[in-house]
Amino acid sequence: MTGIKIFSKLFTTIEEVNSINELSPFSLRLDIFDHNDINLKIYGVCSQSVSLWRTQSKRSFRSSLQVDRGQIHIRIPIKGSFHYEIGQGNICRSGAGTIIAASDTNPMVAGEEVDMICLELSRQKIELYLKRLLPFEFRFQESCTVLSFPRSSVDEFCEFLTRTHNAIVLTEGDLDIVYPLFEEMLMSKFRIFMSENFSSLIQVRKYDRVTEMALDFIKYNLKNKVHISEIANYAGVSVSTLEKRFKRDLAMSPIQYLLDKRLDLVHQEILESQKFEFVSQIAIRWGFKHMTDFSRRYKAKFGYLPSQTRARR
Image (tube, rainbow, N blue to C red; front, side, top):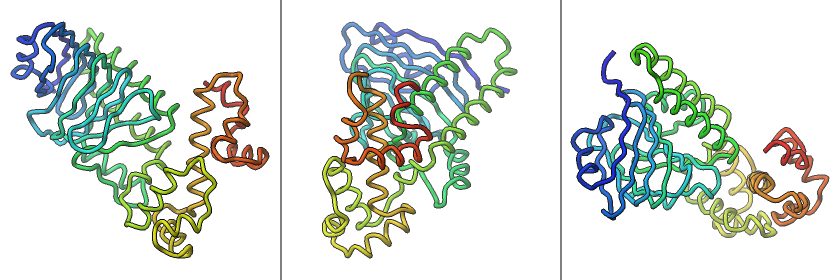
């Protein structure tokens, strides 16, 4: 087996940064915006099929790949923020759980004081697996796809990648022997992660104009009292047409979708809130007025009562 390399480098000068553009095993091209006080570290393992590395930088920088290897680049911010030049806006750790998947050709711009874990997997293998998993054909966008998942799931996946990264970087044995297991473990973990959160992928699918408009209306009215006729009116169709589109595209009604999104937001806020704030206060803030009904829906979705959520942090 060839082409497997462990790479670890701390760059403190612009000359050292420029050198990676010629010698990087990741085929990276880096551009540092501020040449003063450079402190950029890239370390991990790479191959043609699966790569895993960590990038830490004090200064903002631009990163692009010089060779298209048919990979999907999965980025999870541990600290700081970044964005892609084409597609979605700024992504930061303080927001909801997100995983960013981008093509080889879309340059990334990282902010200052950034720390991120980076995983490369075969685009073909991932899309083939998702084809078997999902009830529709899913393809990653050419620019980048922001996948929103429960924050706890992303945290667990990020922690797994970090532990695996640390273990493989410290490997002192024959990497040709260890690497196949490492590769299979990463692919398997990613499959499991997608399987456990596949319902969230449905939201990434591109819908027709009616469904997209309805989703936009719901997105900006999650805290407001909403009647289905208001959603239909905004989308420019009848209530029956709106419900048919939602059943076709999302396998649920508009109101079910609205309640499901609210439950996700309540769940996230309970996890991040202080103990002195009552769960009922958070639920009411997101439009749930009847606590018995709220608790029933919450348990049906997450498998435990809202009052038990903080204990699971």
